[in-house]
Image (cartoon, rainbow, N blue to C red; front, top):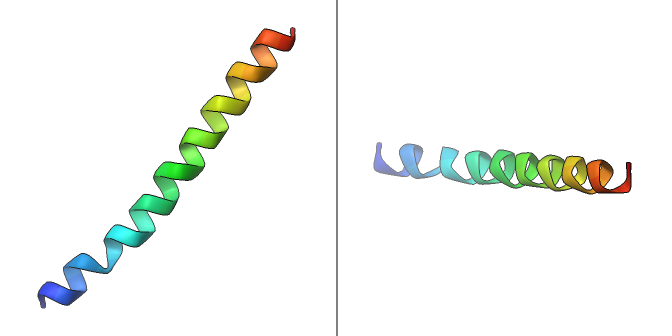
Length: 33
């Protein structure tokens, strides 16, 4: 069952990266304004 628990980590990592990109884009748009 340990393997099943380490599998979702990859999915969480992808979501974290996506959120980081959105925040960066938001900051860039704010600076452009």
